[in-house]
Amino acid sequence: MGLNIPEDLEAWQRWQNSRSLKRQIMSRVRRPSGEPEFTLLVNGPEPRLLVLIDVPTPSAVAAYAEPLRFLEGEQVAVLAPKDLSGMLAGSWTSRRLDGVELPGELRGVRAVFTAGHFLPAGALGYRWSKQLGARFVVAQHGLTTPFAPPLARGSHLLAFSQEDAEFWKSGRDDVTHEVVGAQLLWHASRRGSGRPAGPGDATPVFLGQLHGAELSRWTSAKTARTFCTTTGAEYRPHPAETDRLSRLQHRAWQRRGVRFESSGQSLATLDRPVVSVFSTGVLEAAAAGQDAWVTCVDPPAWVRDFWTRYGLSQWGSDSTPAPPVPQTEPAQLIAASIARILEETV
Image (spheres, rainbow, N blue to C red):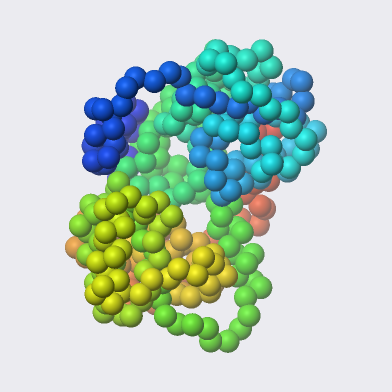
């Protein structure tokens, strides 16, 4: 099994839009707008590395900024929807870009580091990489499903595992890859080594995924409701479950007695059993030594394949074992790969 749409980004974007009623309506009523606006940040006058950040959340910024710790002395540029200098280590100069032409500061860029070319900054950065002859380096950020966006032509993929690399490439020979491990699992495993011994709260927390385009809302909702009502688990909404339909669903569940986990604590701090359909949080919890399972009402074939690929245990069996993590921090391995590319040794 691999990606449903392994190469055609426009086809993938049409599929994604088709999964959201709101997107379909907005695409019909929204007036044509100008080009997206971006902020360019630089920590030196001649950056050789351009980092693209489309989603300026703390976790996303950290995922693509952490390798910079191991590139000390390297001049770097960051392209983002807003000024992120307060979220980045070191001293940065920022300016809003006028238009989408290649800025003069980036003429020396040799590598572009990103999550992909499926969002505005990634798409623009990919276009610039072609102009510059720079390597387009994609780092895996989450677990892969058949619905993941295709990789840009000629990408160099930094994958969690060999299995993830082969899955995402889906037989393509224009994409190269290296295995670097998962930074989020590496962090989780370090948290787990310091967990206190002894029994904790055994009430499971079900991680919501009503927002996901991969699974039908009916399946996501029925699985969550069934699990919470039969086990007494608490439902933890995904941060993206803010649309009207999700809010209505939440209120309906609460009227039926489903309890919600709304402490605001991270899962690591909460230290409780974790259950979901295909959330990365299940594997992250397992890496931290927490009990973690998956479950689904009438799971489709791709969900079962996903569970098998990542070694996830179904509810009712032994807890998901901790996944393997590299001895070397993945951020350091990513930095080493980027450094080799910058020196044209890859």
